[in-house]
Amino acid sequence: MLLYPQGQVIEELLRRGHSVCAINCVSAVQVPSEPKVGDLSLEYIEGEKKLNLRAIQQLRDIIRTFRPDVIHAFTTFTLAWSLFATSRMARSQKRPSIVSFRGITRPLKRWDPSDWMSFKHPRVSWHACESEAVQQSMLRSGCDANRCNVVYNCATPAAPCESRDAIRAQWRLSKDDFVVGTVAMIRPVKGLDILLDSAIRLDNSRMRWVIIGSGNDPATDELARHPKVAKDLRMLGKINSAANYLHAFDLFVMPSRSEGLCRSLIEAMEQGLPSVVSDAGGMKELIRHGQDGLVVPKENPEALANAIQRLYEDEPLRKSMGQSARARAAELCSATVFTDRLEAIYQRVVEPKLSAMRAIA
Image (cartoon, rainbow, N blue to C red):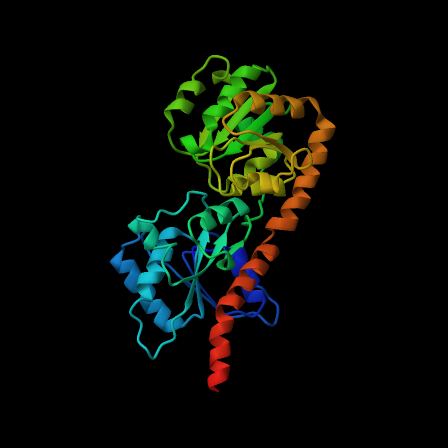
């Protein structure tokens, strides 16, 4: 049973013969046509709070019907739902193993009830960590090193619906502009103010700056009005399936102050875009400095500006890094690799129960 999974993961598990119940799937599912396809059940539960009694009861009912061996919760609140829903199961029904998915580097707090309702709960069998940086945070929080695996995320493949020039025309940009773009929620942790500070320092007449994402950050808003950047900046708000528009960029930038692993970075790499990222969290694990892109110290707009300028001036280097980034994303973040790592966790959490059953038999 998967809560808030990506469709690609479901497809891979079905292709491998597993029976899957997917709750609140976040992307479309294409059922494979191979002969050994497992069974699929799709369910929806409304809500996003940990203590949602209706959601917990709905999940409990689905668990009773589906009888999963493993429940994998991909969000914090669904992890809490899973723990509450399985807390009072009848002895006649086997209790499923529960697996978490952790995507932020904030350490767990010893006295925070919210953390004990989710990641620190003793009935969580295993933690899938989105990057080594996340894994290290979990270990520093007291989690068992033998139950924390790094599982780099995957991203839904982009399906560009319009040409690069057509998208640029919509954004009032020309085909000759050098477009530096990002996809992120506009909030302090994403460091978009650092990006705009870099733009002001560069003051390059050919550079255009594109931010896709909703939210609000006073520092970013103030810099967006600066005369050296305002006319060249496009703040487009939220765009559904933003990955479909990334091919209109020349360079992807993610200057986060803190980051588990940025999914939009994976999407950019999959499309062969060179990237400039901060050294926050897991991004430096994907981007090998000088090979797939450039890594700069976080909170350093001057270093970010210098990196952007370097790639602006060197088109062959951009192309080489973009090709390397695409290969790197396929190596670490494809749906197949992602599912391989998840399946290995599921087998490890289920094996002790299977061994006990075989011993009884």
